[in-house]
Length: 372
Image 1 (tube, rainbow, N blue to C red):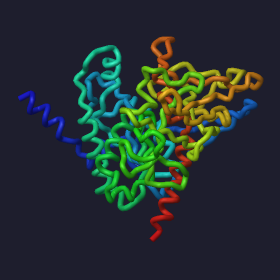
Image 2 (spheres, rainbow, N blue to C red):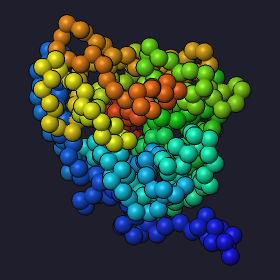
Image 3 (cartoon, rainbow, N blue to C red):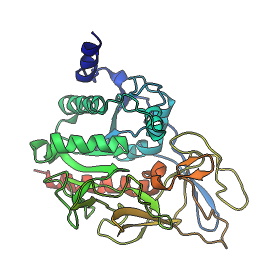
């Protein structure tokens, strides 16, 4: 009987016609209608407030799968979204609503509880196939009932990125539906490609993106501080077998090289929860908006070195000006930084403005090619 129950759970997906099984859908109040007002802090310390404006008639769609975040105490989460699922949408996906309709399914992911158990040497009974089956069911439902031939950007981070990588490989790459793919933003995981190549590895016909007008391609990176590169025991920024490497594309400079990014950083805390607010300016005045944008503070480039291909982030600190000289975002246990995780918690935020602008640019190019 127990085996039958387990099989049923593994093969029965949620009903995504039920609106309760989505975190975000267009034209309703949900996790994608939270407050995103941002304090812009210039290099001289001057502050201005940037209001977030949602697109009134977006011309394309975004399909988002969130990272490992559930605090459910079981190895796989249930279908009831907690505050942590709602919070990560605010951090990572909602800002895309300035350009697209955002669809974000709830799914029975491998939980943060299980991940912590794995990191401590335990062996929780996780079911990765369960998470994939749910996301595929949501994707199929979206295609059948909501897409109507529109272009779509896939967006995922960490576990969400891994699941979308499977989805592209199994259901999109080389198939007719690939014609609707504007791009796949697979952030915070490794997308394998043959060394020095843009296509192959995990996808046979879906290449890495190398320009803002290219469509049907992949944007991917895993971020580390430039002065703290990937250590040998990291799981990020490397290939999964000989002859391949992790793809890396800089959304601020897809053609290559170092570029200033457009970050949207949490005024306090991370996707894992609250934390002390950084001292954003020397006068220690509090920031009262949820997000901070510090123009010119961060630069990044893809660096290929020592067997790793990763997004190297530099803080352009100036001790002489009143603005912060450092940012948070490290994974820590107590005061100990886990360097093998890099800046995983803020992968998306480090270049979120660039990712949103890139989605809009690629969508425009996609529409031009489909004008007939």
